[in-house]
Length: 524
Image (cartoon, rainbow, N blue to C red; front, side, top):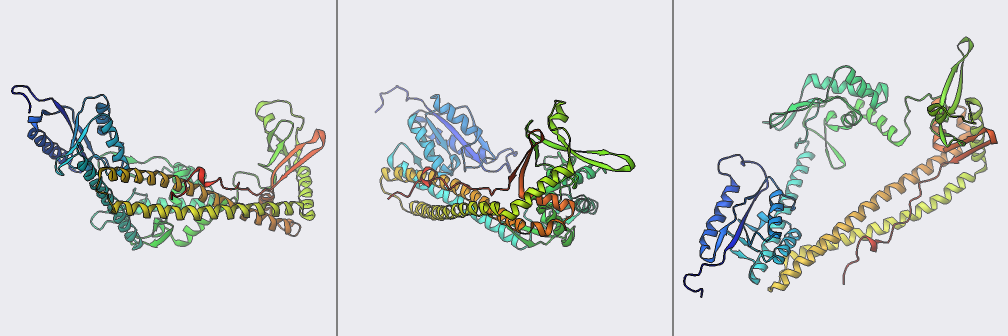
């Protein structure tokens, strides 16, 4: 018993409050104030024990409990590390964190500094073993509730999109939102700009030119007033914004959910035929099969011809002769840019192109390139099998870890040690799960790369087989595209009589690295 007249030791109590959204925070008495008031009343009830409120406020309004990246919590931890706090008081434990792993790490830091945690509405005190066990149980259910709410919200949004409903997002040009029906309505004057963008792209086959022509006509991106009263948008067009507009299925009256499209409740701005033709053009440019505007199609080697003495690309040059006749040449880009002496000089385009075509025909007849591609494709197939096997194994492992985590959340030990082991094992599962998911992402990138390599190699083999038959029937632009598909680079050095072709090679994907380096095996 404390001797008469001796004051109790001062216990400095820091009150932490949090709210996930900013709704209502501007009112005179909000939920953060209510949380703080409850904590202050509790601290006053412990005045006989020397409890006193730290003057500093630690309020996080509009911050999720799913992570600890919060300004007030950061300040609290800093003060705690300096020894300015003895007890942290919260309204409920989930105000501090809803993540079991984050909470376990916070409690570990609290314990190192001898700082306790009190939840005023849950009669929780971490200074006792039962309090720490109760803490683990409460937090597990808080995290479970958060995940269930997130899953329900995602499922609700997905179901609404499958029914064609607009579920929110950035406002796009051509539509306004009917707040009562929560649906999109067409703005006629903006819809005309959208249709013009689609038509301009079909005429120019160039995203850059489409952006320039929209800007030249004075059209801007979507402009609206935000909830804060600020004007947002209204900027000039660029390639990225035009590309997003042309790819948006909302303009054809559809709603995207994952990889699928569903018929929307809103009215379309462009026709399905116009939209599909634009998508085909964009896809062809992405895969390299579409026409390349801005280059002279009659120059077959543009982009692949290099000057070997200068180790520089060669650019095109056209010289006008008598009677309007034009003569085509290739010249070293380094000489053009720097004015240096180049032994290659001007190359007559017809002569160098004829020499390259003759070598390609020889490659097609000999079959050596075809055989090499077949051998390399065998390596690609091997990489495919290895990658697919590891992907299947890791997918199974991830499912096992998820199942184990659910079992742990449903079973608790009656001892303090059990609660600690539970938090530790869940932390291990979360860390390992992150590693496995990262590795699965790497494997999926690798699988897409091997699929592209196979497709490219099969296409080149087909072109080689039919080269002699189709060459004479092709247009200039088609001939250039065919050469670019078969030849990676052409090096030329006329002074030494060198013409070196670097044929197409499949993008060989290296075998997957051992999974043990990235994803630990299951523990026995």
